[in-house]
Length: 396
Image (cartoon, rainbow, N blue to C red; front, top):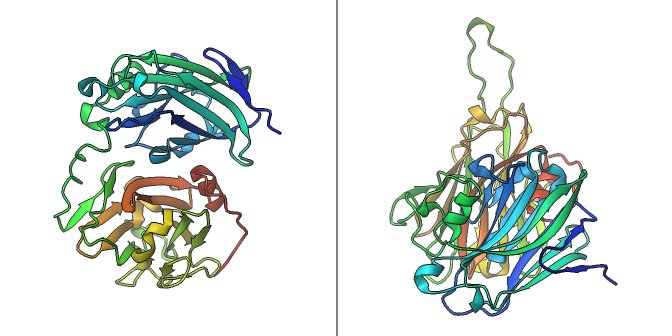
């Protein structure tokens, strides 16, 4: 039996948990209508404090504030206990890409539903179903999570907004250009627009690119990690001559379309298998950092249709967290494709683990998104991305 509260426009309800999954769905799906969901982390003035508080398909995660967007599923994961006190409200929105120029609006969808669920149990907490038949706008403010007397509540809003994602973002105080909020179906921004280059570097956190599946299937995807194992810089006569190097490990979490989840990493001896389940294999544990080839994860592309997503991460097994000096880079290599390079170019020297990139199966294509989110450990990262594994202390 469920205690779900069905809301109407303007109604609110208390939240029984602060860890949530929120799914946005709609009725009809007219051909050519492209939808984007987004969230805005707002201060007491109802504005974003920084552009990073705008969560959308090109910037889908703000792990330090406990929010993650999976754009293809229109699903948010929220951990409101991690949200800073400066954030007073989180507004959820849906927009129709290029709706005005295409003559499209929300009346074509008939209805939109927001479903709030308990992150751990999956139980439904609240549901807001809005009849959009009268709505001629191309943007819709769906609802908002907000603070009330040291607790969080959810309010059903259902307010139409004239204009697309850009004017909506500007309304909330985001300084954003048209190219940044154009639909994911549009031509991607440089430098990732052309795949005939020998190497493509994902420069910005949240930037994505899809591999060109020309041959009908991917035989193998090679994920390579290289780094500087002795990052301690000289401080003249007083430099630490006994400083040890850093043992940086490459690893991944995987999730299959049927729901199977797990990890491939040297810690605990989970090296995987390329030819058998889970079709991912770690080739070695380079504890010195001196191997020319670094560490490699091999993903069997012939089984890519079985995967839902793979989270590539790296963590410091031994040594102090000194990310700013390790010069770590992950390169994703596939036959007849440009190499995709992701550098760890932002740093948190108080954290031991970094989520580097997400590989997602989108219509059997490979979508690669740069993350660079730092965490104190595996469990924290798992919760941020909604994986659902349990962790125990391990060694290698």
